Structures are given as structure tokens and as C-alpha cells.
Image 1 (cartoon, one colour):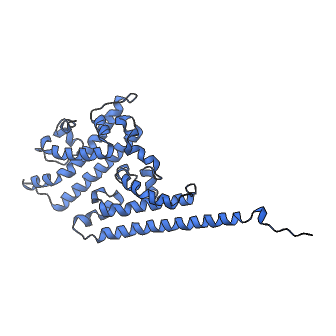
Image 2 (image 1 turned 120 degrees about the vertical axis):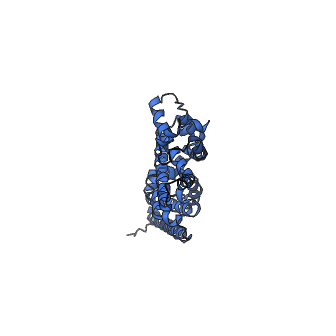
Image 3 (image 1 turned 60 degrees about the horizontal axis):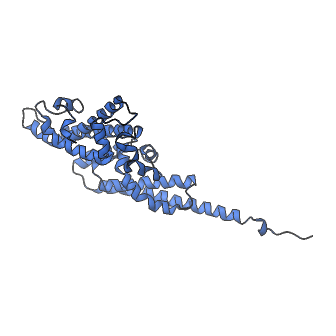
Length: 287
């Protein structure tokens, strides 16, 4: 699939993400468009991306639905591309009569990242609602969630506010898969205990967040963390901020795990006490 045919022209591109100079051509934007498209395909699969970009409607899906999907895809693609192109745009502008201050450059990048996230959230929600497009509903990116205790962004949001971001959830899905087996082993036999499962989900989400703040780029943080710390990082603060966040999330996860152990002990003690009141254990007075 050719990425240079998704947008008809630079004006078409500006219709989805304005902020480039009038003399910027679509050819100049293509490397950034291509890099963003490749990133998007890792998230929504190349099959779903191509199906939407080429408006290949599966049986039962109307053309108007595909138009909606293409609009969402182009919004995400344009915003992500502009974030990548921002440094070239800044150099180009500063070489002209109009200067661009550093704070303006950072603010523009913030806006483009936020727009990209919102568009990708909407695109993923669109695919969940139309799972036959590009085989999304049967892809591993979608079916893997069914085996996990936290199956979507809305459920993750119950334990930490990620703005119900489907993009963030999809990005950390591999961490959820990686982290869950250790917690699952800890609660074996108590999967139907609501209190234990609630604590297990909490431990899972906070453990994942502890890994995110250490290993992810700032642009991949959920909005609730990204906007609180974005300027500190971009202005060159030390890694202590990340360490502080990592410690906070790790302690929260540890607290939930301790709660699991306590709940299991309490349930086990209750079972033992109930078992001791058997008819065969009673003593009868002989008159």
C-alpha cells in the first residue's frame, strides 16, 4: 500500500492537522507520514490499516462507515506526522521572517500529540465496533484481551485514570500479558472471590504503570501523567521524577498484593472454622 495516496494534497493534509507553512509540500511531509503509518499499523494491524485506507468494506458494512473510519485514520495520521515533522517546521520557520520560540514549539508538539491520541482512541473504538474490518475482531491484538482480567481501557480506568484511552491500553497490552501470570498464580483457587479479583486487577494496573514510567517515552504516557510531567522532562530535568513515579506505582501495586494475601488468609481461616463445625466433631452427653 502506498502512503502517499492517503492524502490528496497538502491542503487535504492541513484539513486534518493545520500548523504547517503554506509552502510545505506533501512530498516534504511523506517521511513523517510513513513513520506514523508504520507506528499505527503496529497498533491496529496492517490489515485493518489497509482496509480503512483503501475503504475495503467487508460484507454488511456500509460505505458511510468506511468513510468515517478513513476520516479517523487521516486525523491520527496527520497529527502524528506533524509531531514528527515539528522540528523541520521549526527550522524552516526560523529561517524565514517569522521566528518560533522554544515554548511555542513545545506547545505545538503537545497539541499534535494530544490530537494524535484522541484520534487513535476514536479509531480503536471504531474498530472494536466494526470488528470485521481488516479482520480486526479476530486479530491477536483484539482476541488477546479476552484472556485478561482487564479487557479494555474503561476497565483499566477504574483503577487509574488513563482517560479511558484505548491507545494507551493497546500500547501496554503486552505488559498486561507479561505481568498477569505472576499475579494469577498468587490468587489460584480464589478467582471467583470478588474482593481478591478486585485487588488483583488493581495490582496488575499499578504494576504495569510502574513499568511504563521507566521504559516508555513521555509521549506514550497516559494524558493524566503526560501533562503533569511533560514540561519537566522536556526541559531536561533528571530521571528522579521518573524514579519517584515508579516508586509510587510500585508501592501501590505492593499494597494491593498485600491485600490479596490478607484476603486469602481471611477466606482460608473462615473455611477452616466452618469445616471444624462438622456433625462428627460434636460431643454428645449421655444421660
